[in-house]
Image (cartoon, rainbow, N blue to C red):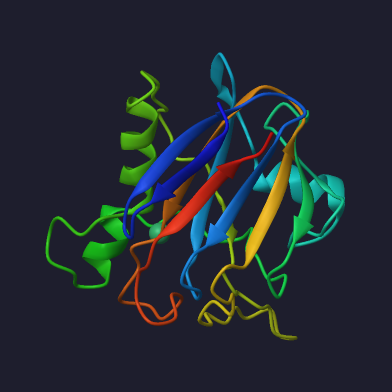
Length: 197
Ligand SMILES: [Zn+2]
């Protein structure tokens, strides 16, 4: 499966990526965070793990050339190319209904956790626990005192981040619907997932 899948604002989509192929997440309008999840094809209990990846890279955030590993410590994606300013988060959990309730949103606010479940369901798949995503274009710098800052995404229209699959996998991207904390510059907008030849 190659070609473009548009991820509408506030929604999620899943694509299947064969080992060796590249998958690119494009910020169509700029300033938009995407929550990216990856699962081993055929066994979604093996999944990209930000915590296991940090243990391999000894870094908080991803860098071109480095691999993301699964909860079984096998490489699943490699960060192959990045035309954005290069800031991507690996610390923050996916937004979910409890997060929006705590922020005072009315019930029914879209969330990345539900977008993941819906996108996987489209492939007949399900997970019991929402993995911690790689939050592409999300800016969460760590200050010297260890405090986190929440800054609006600095990606420009057309900026992209490209991964190479190290195994057959399912990649899910949610165009984060967060509109109560200012991480999406200008409000939620769409993304695109390109599976390259
Ligand atoms: Zn989100």
